[in-house]
Amino acid sequence: MSVISTKYGNLLPCSGASDYRKKHRCAVCLYDSRALKSVYLEEPQVLSFPSGEYQAELITFYEDGNAKRIFPLYGQISAYWSIEEEAEYAPSYDFEIAGEKYHIKPECIFFYPSGRIRSITLWPSDEMTFNTPAGPIKTKLGIELYESGRIRSIEPVYGTVIHTPAGDIKPFKYRAVMMHAENATLKFTEDGNLILN
Image (tube, rainbow, N blue to C red):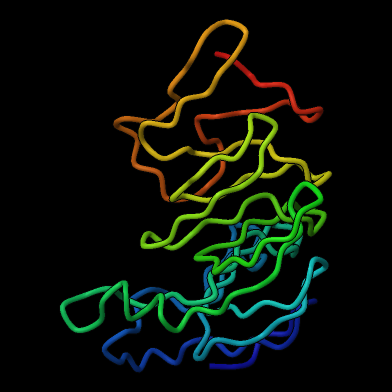
């Protein structure tokens, strides 16, 4: 398959020759307008984005050509390749979140059309504590940010108690199956106030 030229570099789509960890999916997907929607790469590549350089094996795009999501690794989890094996090869990066630095191994990075990071999703085996306007919060999912870099939402681990003027709350999506870190249970306004639904 031919190399695809993008603003992030030249992308070589997957040839279709599958190995034990390659997913069976279209190497290149397009919008109805014929604009590039996603590319599943032959090999993970380090690409340059406005917020930094990150490895990508799958990259999705907004219709205007700006990157939407990148997955540093995108292998098929099966009896022959475990999530633990996949995560072992995933790269880690330093991110600045709400003025603090964190070393994170992202499963997925979601961008605003501007190129600023909207959310960072963790691998299922990982958990991290982020300093939020409600205090330190441990999450197994990740963090969502405003375009300004302030914290927008976070999914606390089960049993987390948040103290509010209206009383204690235990935010947790009991039945929701969440694949990405955005629109999580504990939400904040851009100036750091807790949003109570």
